Length: 98
Image (cartoon, rainbow, N blue to C red; front, side):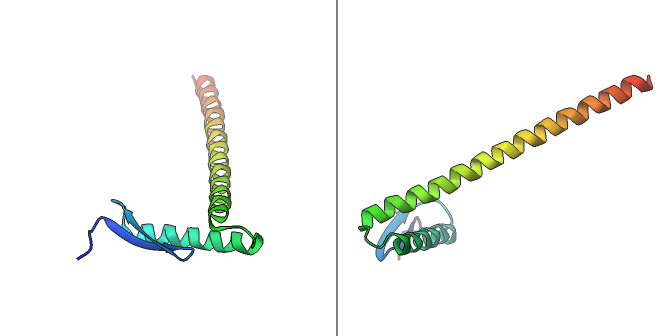
């Protein structure tokens, strides 16, 4: 019986045992995502070796993550600014009502 903390995945034709506390389905989904990205990178850069392809894929995924994080941060800042503006309006309205 396999160790319940090991999830076996395959990426780019290589099998890897992943020791994790995460849900096995989640780990499998991550591996499928990486596999899809590596396939996409291989089509755009067919001469890359496996290590170069993995690095290119990691850079692409990291770039997407950083952009998403930046967008989320900017959105959060905009929401905070709007909330502060609304708070000032409410404070002014309450002051006028007194």
